[in-house]
Image (cartoon, rainbow over all chains, first blue to last red; front, side, top):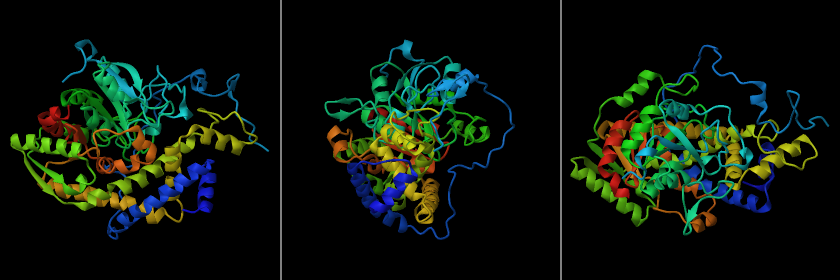
Length: 93
Length: 393
């Protein structure tokens, strides 16, 4: 992990780390190098990926309404609303 | 031993990863400070339908990825310099008979081991995750923390079952297997999983082995180093999933919004930077790097394949043994100084909890140690745990 890659990851994830946090993250990645060696030592050439730990297939269910909330309820968690609209900060330059 | 009086038998607490419509849910993060859900999580709704009261929320670490709750944005409970888990403390003080928690990275199991309580992390997909704050969806499981195995079983019976609202909920006929009678007759102790444990944990492990043997259970110590690769693989998968799951928190639609910004990018960045703690930020960066074009095949894809290797290793063990006994922690307590010195200790200490997390297998913690069994063997594991649960007190 070098600082250039870290800066790119910060931008991608909309984060701005302090200098001390950057040093910690770089140290964290350094420790993970040994973990990669552990993983690489396991032969997975003929092994299928395991995304689901249980036999779960893509689930399709009937499109039935099961929970109905009022607009007021749905907007209760919004930082700002006005006459039923969500107010968001200016997004256009 | 029950810590509660009879009038509290139907009173539970929920950890702060479980949505509650009449109490705030924060996931331990400043990002969700004051957030009120419009509905209860399915597990809590089922308990309420059965006549239970959810008396309070128990604080968790930010998105429940830490040791016991120490990264909560309001600080963690501690006593004499030792970190405590709030759900466990509430049970120990008699406020509730049990806690319903989301086990993301083993905090619930570590809390049970260190506080002399019992926890059950059921088989993945047997308890609905509908209405939980998503963190590491492919392995996190709604779990129960209680005074003993009997109480764990009582609560698990009520919350387990198929739920159409959860796409990862297993079919009812598979979940019904958890009610099939089975007995733990042969147990394996994995030598590789004893790595790094202190004398106090070793003592608990020996005590559990002695009690199991005294009860006619055959116990063998065997070596299987592949299972110890669970930790690095789970850390990568958990961080990748976490990175995606917390990308929704941007300060726009709900949650914390920074006061100072001049454009939309600054709004996103300042809100996330100010609201998220250091462990979570590190996990986000790690997860993002794991999923990057350069590393997707090298790390993420590799970990998914390692997950199968580990599952198959357990499967092979279960051809001979009914369960695997292992520690849940490296020591019987964590000091504040330890965590201060090693901010990422949770990504190392999950060495003992990652095997059950990455495979979705059920795990019971009792007597300070962990018993991992075949899928749907919760009842057999709880019965076995009853034999030695008092060893953890």
